[in-house]
Amino acid sequence: MKRNYYNFHHTIFQEAPVCKKVVIWNFLDFGHVNFVHKRSYKYVKVLAKYGNATFAEFGVNHGLNRFFPFTLRHVMWHQFVPPDTVMHISRTPFGTYSKVIVKIREFKRDNKVFTRIEHSFYLHLPFFLLPFKKLVKWYMEHWSALLWEEDLAMCLRRQHALDKGFKDAPLETLPFVSEGLAD
Ligand SMILES: [Fe+2]
Image 1: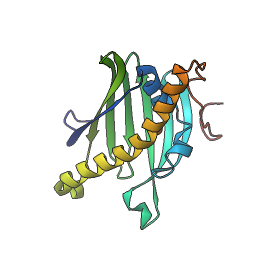
Image 2: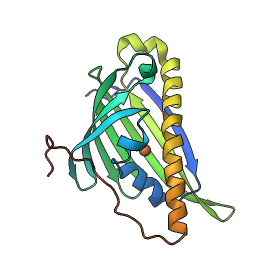
Image 3: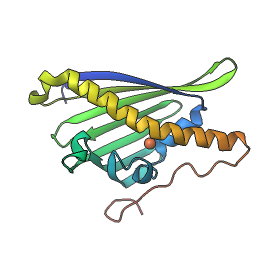
Image 4: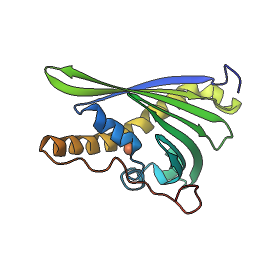
C-alpha cells in the first residue's frame, strides 16, 4: 500500500460523563451491534478473535436504505491497543480500504469523570467520489451522530449501574459464526 494511499481524512470528537472502561467496553462489545444499531447495521459476524484483535464482517445499511433497501458488506480488522487506542481497517464494497484510529481519554471536569473520544477516519475514496468530499464529510458526521446517540445511551446506563454498585458483566458477548475460524 502506498504511503499516501488515503486521500480523505476527517476527525470526529465525542464526549460522555462516563469512565474510560465503559467506553472501551462499548467498542469491544460486538454483540450489541446486532440489536442496538439495527438502523445502521443489518448484522455483524465475528469470524475470529485472538486477544484484543477481532476479524468481523458487517452488513451496513447505508444512508439511502430508507428509500432503496440494500446492504453493503464490509470486512474489518479491529484491534484494541491498550491503554487507550482502538484501530480498525476495513475493506469497503468499492474494493478500497479505510482506516480508523480512535483515541479514548479520561479526564475530570468539575470533579466529575468524563471520557473524550477522538475518531480519525482515513479513507481512500474512489475517483468518482473525489468531487464530493464535502458530502462524504457530512455523511460521516450524520452516520457517527446516529451511532453515538445509541452508544451514549448504553454507556450512560452502564455507568449508572456501576455507580449503583452492580458488578461488571463480562467484557463482551460475541456473535461467533460457524464459517469463522473461532470456535
Ligand atoms: Fe455501538
